[in-house]
Image 1 (tube, helix red, strand yellow):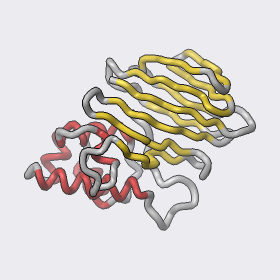
Image 2: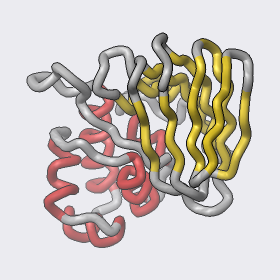
Image 3: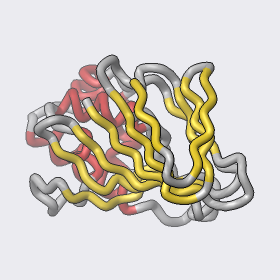
Length: 193
């Protein structure tokens, strides 16, 4: 779950909905817990400046940072990215990662807190790459390619997955999704803990 959440190309004057949701949810949950910004920042291991920017919705924050904030607030990650008016729903359907191309994005479709499971739909334009830090021990990913060819880099291992192929791996090491082809790549990502 350690991926970059950012505005993407050409959206300098508008914020994606997910940044607005994260800002409102972090602020609401922090206040409900009776925490100051400094106290939450310390508990999550982030700077107060970062937290202020997150609560304003104007920062390109890593999903790993959001994970730490969720843990410090005592909630599951998806609670931070879903619309604030959505209470305890597994249905999210929000773009949580945007690449440089408007065709490239990772959409969190659903998450179930009982077992910490996330379902994502990803699209990568030709030449696009997504790099991730290692997830905590015990996390796994299942990737199913639905169109195009995905290059999956897991540590030093490089795999090429064509349409209809899948791979399951522990994600406790750095990994990357790459589209090294000439056509868009679409895949389903399931994250499990």
